[in-house]
Picture 1 (tube, rainbow, N blue to C red):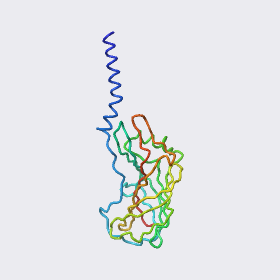
Picture 2 (cartoon, rainbow, N blue to C red; picture 1 turned 180 degrees about the vertical axis):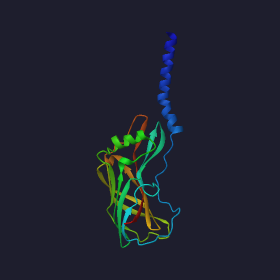
Picture 3 (cartoon, one colour; picture 1 turned 90 degrees about the horizontal axis):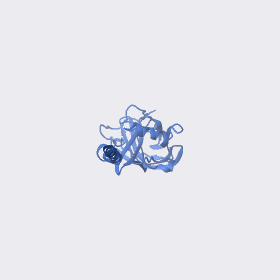
Picture 4 (cartoon, helix red, strand yellow; picture 1 turned 90 degrees about the vertical axis):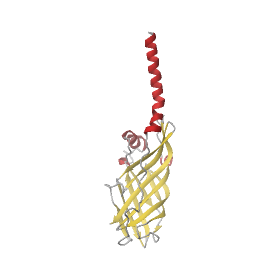
Length: 228
């Protein structure tokens, strides 16, 4: 009986140590930061060709280095910070340029297709966090014109301000951001991040005890547009 008691005590100690130590070991030595969100790159860029003014359409899917969108957020796992990046290539949109001015733009993202490196995290994101069954998409709509006269034509990147309305989980909020823009060949490439307080959109960051998620993060995008 004494040996049985010691055995049960040892098992209990091992279980308690495993409960507290395993997440710490994972957070500090196993978990890795996700790759950063894709952004505009001058690598392989060439001089612009064709007219700037006109109607443009987002090139959809198949290549996340051309068109993608998602989110970046910090997870805290037993005191260890892990950067999480979720993304999808299910992005559509249009833009109108008149007199070298971006007068209209709208981008729609299929939030229900955003994934990370963890299917368990993605399930929480789709169901409890974003309720994608009810709100499957997010949109950004430009609300103020953007002057494009300073946009280079030699295949180099410039940064331009943009103002619009971000709709996420059914909630609309004004959004301002800096957008990196590149004209290369016959396409326009743009990327940016919208700093986001999740509670502003009715989003409650998960708190699962040993894993918590920051109350702020960003909505990220990389889009490539071709003439319509």
